[in-house]
Image (cartoon, rainbow, N blue to C red; front, side, top):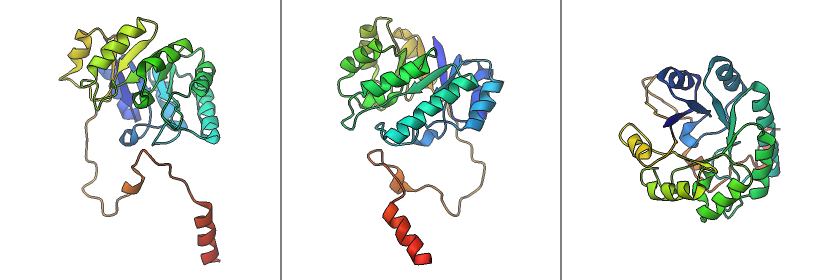
Length: 240
């Protein structure tokens, strides 16, 4: 069974390769579920690693319903990844009701070619998993990264098994979410070819933080945060 490591930094990517991982999914900001990595991180990792590097294309945190401008950014990022020599693309788009946006996902799949395309964990928000599976197979998606619509892949293993059976080797079901040394063997035992995890360790690098840079108000996947035109105008008016 092959191991894909979700790497959100250069050091994570190097550690994955040195430890023997088969592949990495490169992203940034694991705390918010991962977003597209920067150009500098992409370039540095791709120039250094010899194992395959798949890249997450997700323009922001929160939901998986994107504006036209965000969609254009995603397409530009895919083109850049291909130019830099990455080995696969990871992404996914939903409608506002969390059904599969098949047309725009298909456009990303086509743009990514000849690179393989993994549909990301947006899949876990879709109500009809088996219908979505059929649609994704039909447009040429190679993998679906999913926890089986549960908080962890171990909890969702029954659905994962059912999806794997229905896929019947036309598409690879990639279990991910809460996989660790204590449960990885369950997925090998149940016939999965690959698993996905971050294998993260927390390291404190400073003693304390006097003023936090996080904002709890923004950590809500139901919302989109943007700079408000009227607020900006009001602030500018107040300082002129």
